[in-house]
Image 1: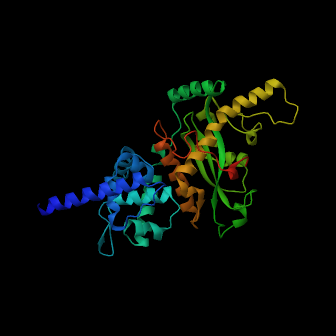
Image 2: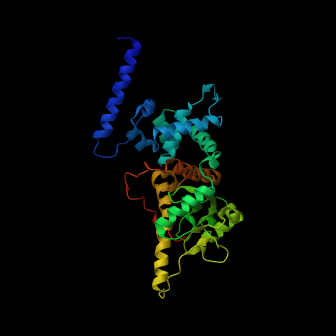
Length: 340
């Protein structure tokens, strides 16, 4: 057997052994790689998707988009060659999908903690520069499709999306930290999301302190300044936080004071059927991209970018194959997000 044939045979044996261990483990396995991180690139579709949280096609698409933005064009640090783009992207997706520290990620991918940190921030910054390619307001034809879909879901005509806010847990910021303490008793930044009938983000606003109310967050967003042009004759579904003359484009339920008529109660049920889509979207983001469950970063600008990246990845993955293995009926929204 030639030298190169022996190398190929050894790689094949490693791949078979890893696949066997992953498939026969009674529990979810802990994948330890170190210098063998390249085995990730040899995994079958199901195993790769379970660990990296994207399909092979989605991974390759991200590689192309990052390359087009000029990422990984021969930069060198300390006389050492730069980390290959595919390895950078693997580290970044692992970072987004787990709560591992940079030291733990560096061990998994056989790089120094500083190299892991730099590589992940490289991908993070480049991906966020592509936000408009992944999160965009619908055109006229897409609005008509969404309106028809929402009418089927909740029985209300003229609806093209659902809006809500979501807390993202963080450490107490050093500057104006008290502003980030929400009414639930923990520090957070807010994510405002508008989603279509499939739960894809059409618009996001990230970064207000956790103390801010949903309605005030909406008034502060870029979307609010241009809502008349964007909404045209359509409307969104929202909760009682958006009741008021300042939000004529949001259909809200009646506050239940114990005296609602049967017709009003039925109307609330209809709104709830459609509005649950945005709640499930937030649930999927936190379930799939676990980094945003509890962000330990101290820099608020990085926190905002990580949340934006999670929304971008959510839109990339949302489709017919985006089914959570742990929650096939839909990921539950965390209790700390309710009724902000």
